[in-house]
Each structure stands twice: as C-alpha cells, then as structure tokens.
Length: 294
Image (tube, rainbow, N blue to C red; front, side, top):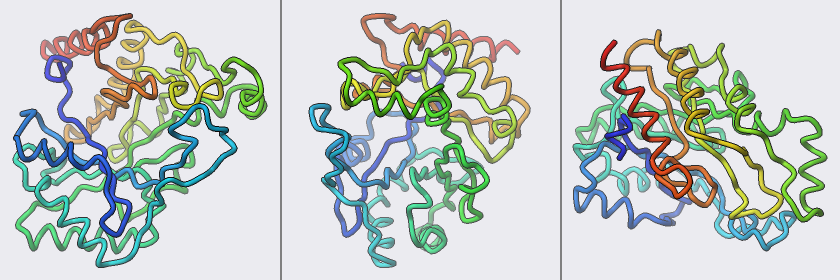
C-alpha cells in the first residue's frame, strides 16, 4: 500500500528513555531480524516522558503523573544508545538523505547535551563504517528560537498552531474538562490552510509535516483536539499546496513528512478504513502518476 501511495520510507518511532530503558523495541528488532517488510525505513527518537493523562481518557487531564521519565544520563548512555540501534543503522533498507542516515528527533531541545550527542554519534558512525548521520529535528511554531546549528535540518509541525490560533482556544480547552462534548474542534478545511507555511516550507533544510486527519479523543475523551471533516478530496487539496511549495527545492530536499501511517489512537492515519476505504492512498497514487508524466 505504501508503494502504491508513493511513500519512500517509513519513519519508525523508537523509545530510549536513558539508562537502557526501552519500550516497543521488539517491533524494530523483528523488522531487522526478519528483513520484512522489504521497504526503506529510518528511525525517529520519541524522546519524551510518558504521562498517565496521555494514555487514559478516563483520567483527569489535570493529573500529570509520570509513568516513564525521559532521562539523559550522559556520554556513556549516548554510546549505549548508538550501539543498541546499530543493527538498524547497518540495515541495507535504512533511508538516507544526501547519502546520510536520516535520524529524526522529536524534541531536540529537550536533550541537554545536544551538540555532544550529535558529535559523538557522527564519530561512532565513522568508527563503525557507516555513512554520517543526517539529523532532522522536530519544531513547532517558534521557528527561529527552535533552530540549532547542531542539526542538519528541521521538520516543521504546525498542528499546535492550528488549534492555538482558534478564537477562544484557551477558554475552549478549559471548558472541555467540564462539558460532555468536545469543544476544541477545527474544521479540516480550515486546518489545511494553517498547516502550510509558505515562507518556511520553501527553504531547503526545512521540511513540512502534514496531517491527513487528527482526533485525539480515543486517548483523551472530550478534552481532545480534533480536526473535523477530513476527506480524501481535502487531503488532495493539501497535498497539492505542499508539493507546489517543495517542487523548486533541491531534489534531495523535496521531502514531506506525513503523520501518520497508522496512528489509530490519535485518529491520524493513512491506512484504509470503513469510511473512505483506501481513498487517501488513491489520492496519493493519482498524484504519483501525474508526477511520472511531467
């Protein structure tokens, strides 16, 4: 299905909480051990703590109990992290940008020793016969403040801007804890305009992150942020806008991150469902064929 939709690679989240603590690592280990799926992939480090409120909609959102804390113990841990991921980096399927290993970081500025982390991994890559890394950091709306020379590029995620710029957004979020229905809802037809930043998306080293849909209510209940009314037709409209913005970049930088392939718990996916079948993938296949005929 991914090949049909013109997707070049999957970016798998991995969880390294420091001190050797991992979760969901069996999935990646199996991908490497079995050589399946035979499809390019790269890693995204989801370097954030897990809180109880993020996983159970029946728990008050005012409850900030930490289930697993993200830690950064130091240089030895940086080495251990690299060597634990080394079988993935050596895999022939590992995706590259500019002939470098793409490694995505969810919260680069949460890493207290970011420059040391990047430098150390580049040294370790060379010592182990690997190409250099191409580090891409996630950033939201405070663009200039969030950029660091330590990384090669950034991926711009404007989801927070979509919800925070709505009229009475703060009031709606507070009231959502009290009323029996979701209030922080944005129509997808409006969201797609806010998901596009013309100034930044045209820059070579900044890549767009776009969403086919978003509905966090399976995890957070009525207090969820929701993009309502997504359709394959609106998805096509968004794709055309973003593709037109990246079209004139250097070829290696004509990259678009899509969140997500199968984030069902957040109503954020491309996989077929009962409502539209493979409608979102059909749109992407249509655009792929159009590009092939240019």
